[in-house]
Image (cartoon, rainbow, N blue to C red; front, side):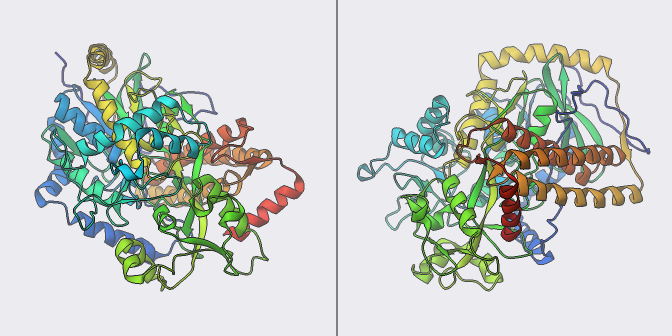
Length: 634
């Protein structure tokens, strides 16, 4: 029988961080040393307080829609979790679509207890919340000609020929069933989250067209599909009696014994309490990607976008793959001295036109499909067009003023609400745009069941590299991938093969706990915390500039070498700061430094341009031109 294995800790005042006994640390300097799932509150240097306040107000409004009883369960679960004393459970790191899918299928289908760890106040504090466009379904109208085969062709085309067939086939064939199982009210099985997608006047689901899709097949809820899906799927998870929510939790290390992952080490972002959380059923990393390490990013500041899952896996020795393929979204709203705001792919799907400063439509210059070409092609086209001119004015705009104003405001209410605060209107104005880091196509290497190279460790969603995206992601595949592979992880863990690993993990865990005494957390004086946090913010701004300047839309070897040198310096500083004061900010910086270094090294090692990885020959002249272009882009 598995004994009580949760190690709780008490805070003590201490000016040095004691080591966590038994945690395996990869000693090679080039490896990522440790990481976490973070909900950082570090703002870009040029973000205005008004933008941050608006986002906070929006989140508060969304959180108020959660049923009061469920909200109490979420908020108080930090206390309830102390009642879960046994390690016969599944740990899921991250509360987005992938994490909740894994948790719901594990708990409902296989009756496996699950602990869901997330850094925010509520589980909706995740990147899935911010997805605008929609989720791929299937157009069952015979006139459309849609099919699993047609979707697979679109995915391969967008992925620059680098997608893996088994992953593409899995998502194309299983996708509609997973959408019905987890999100729709049309399933013959138990429905986990009944999401009110938009419908047409005749009551059928409204399916829209997006770039590089051969048929209208995108389910949506206005222009805030991610928000609606996240609200419903997190509430479904919160209702389930076998799923426990643990908020405010930063994962700082994986616990590894004899090459088996046994759980995680955590830090409470408010109390500073450190805890070991064990799990014989496995640990799932599903905390998103690393888009937030770039100066121009569609990831809102303060969310899990600093590469925490990637760094955790790398530090533990798990295999990473395809990290050079960072997708840049072609159209983020460009307003100087403010954070970038995503202008969804669906705008171009509904007819938005890319224009230069003179009003000329230029998209057909770089591809026959124009605005509906694959994202990597459109992003480079927008980037290169933006470098033309003398830099005295912005040079790339998105124009959808030819569509009816009332229709636009009804179809894209969230975007229009944001634009109104900037005194802009979809129906009247040309919108200045620039590419911005949007999605991590690579990540932790997994198989079709979400298994990583480290037994006991799984990954799903943007954190994972399944091979689905190849060199570039097809629009609206991200939420679907999270559903399909999150559920597949749970299916494997609940299978006979998955259950057979449970006993081995339990034995190793017993030995680990016997040989590792409880450890104490660290509480530093406020002066130390304030100093470290301020320095971490400065270094994070430097890191983001480095990533955009040298590991951005267009790269060259010399720039990547410069980035690696800078990132090594930042990583050394981050390690020092984190040792001095293990806080939200210092942990976030350490994550970003390790993740950024992994991306830069992967990009430098791949000499072939494909998909989102564009590497060009370097020369002194080209380097100078690139620096001028980057300055103009800002």
